[in-house]
Image (cartoon, rainbow, N blue to C red; front, top):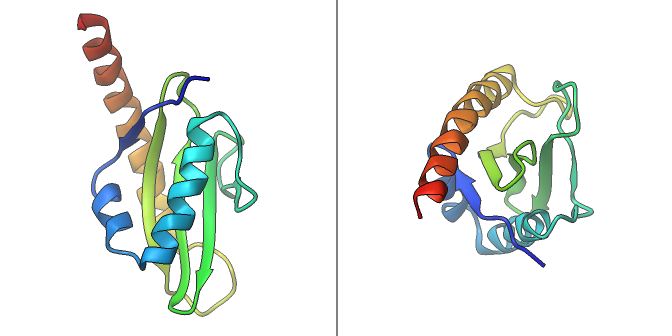
Length: 123
């Protein structure tokens, strides 16, 4: 079984490390499952995207609700697009600034994936 590497987009790795340990563990395990080609029970398609290639991991903790958004769009890697604590008290909708950030990071992930592919070919 091949485990796909993770590409951390922008500050996502630091953002994950800043979360409570239990949340890090749960999100980390869900990402590991994605790396193996599986889907965690806590991962679901992220609303606002027209395909199931962008997924959201939702973790509830005493400190609040935390989310990690990643894409399986790329054949050889998993790209983590955004990791954050949901602070909105109104409904379950993701704030528009977070949605816009995810969209821009998806474009950035495309560029970083192409760079990753070039590096792999040189190895």
